[in-house]
Image 1: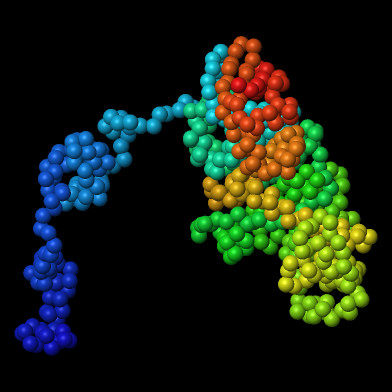
Image 2: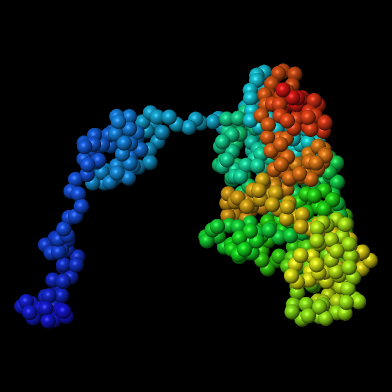
Length: 547
């Protein structure tokens, strides 16, 4: 009812009645006189009441809920943490403040590993077993590449306790072992083998490894990539002149970071992420260039930046680039042609283009044989023509290809006027192998597993991925046989995921690998029974043998 009517009915003035209503709303004592709730349900707590006094006495000893639960379990009483929290709340106890370790009751706790310090590296004679003996197979290769020189040339940050090269080796070990995040290093802090691989007394903790990349700026990342490429080339890893290019969006499940939205093919949707440009060396079958954090407005020009990077490194532009239709613009195709770079790309189809293609007389179509392909797609039909594009001066060669397993014809654009049709189709089909390289980087090197939303950290993690991928590719070439094209995951599972015994003496270091079925491949490749001087282990000779 309106307040004026109620006031008149009960003999109040309208103003006095409104004051009474206000006091009723804000005064707990007045509210308690009206509308009392009927207590329903059990009026006793059969699990809490019998132990109430005991729980109160334990809490007065400064024990937490989990400590009290453990004490009650030892006395034969099982009760949930939620029930204990309700009981303590009923008795007026607040949450305990955060306690120091010396204020906690005696209980089993995690052990504290020593602090990583290169000055405390102990090479005194002893023996120990390690689950990561396969890492030592990479040490001779790292000595050939001179990782120490690469790190110094790139001016990576370091300290007196953990120099730059030692930090990079520890981070590289995670990549070589296929560990998903730097936090997973905590599973290995007590393994002396991985610490010896890095040249430290113990493995650095996750806090150091996760923050190390924050000290590396983007210019240093590019310099590191360039110096590493020069070093592996000097070690016998030749680079090619033809490259497959692609973008990969590293998904970032964060609403707080100001990131652009990019299409994520694995999820078939656009979402916030960090756009990464990748280039794969076709000859060596390895991703040799990566740039993370490409802004969306600058993505079309990333192909030109790669061309300039390659020229600054080798003295000449790439001979051939192969990419899809959305990687760059037609105006940038003109710039590639002016630089003398051959390219093969797709053209985006329109309804008018498709209608014109199907309207061409059968005499203009040519059937070709693709010996490298199998099954029903070996004999596609091709319609060749010259086309003019907006923002491109001159004509380009266009191949409209049908019978490749797609509903609509595939349109290839190229400035290679003299190459055969079979060569062009086969070469573009090889571009799909970059998807395998990206899949390997995701499945084994975990470039999608972000430990931070900061693009700087992702950029450094990408460079570590390129370094680890090239190490595995060099190993695959040296092992040969069917492993020449094997993925890093396959190589690790069959060859490098091996335990062993490390023997330190005054004269050197010996690593005895546990026997496995694939160990003879390591012997045939010359990866065992050889001695190499390891500079970061005080110049001690290292020998790897079979148990």
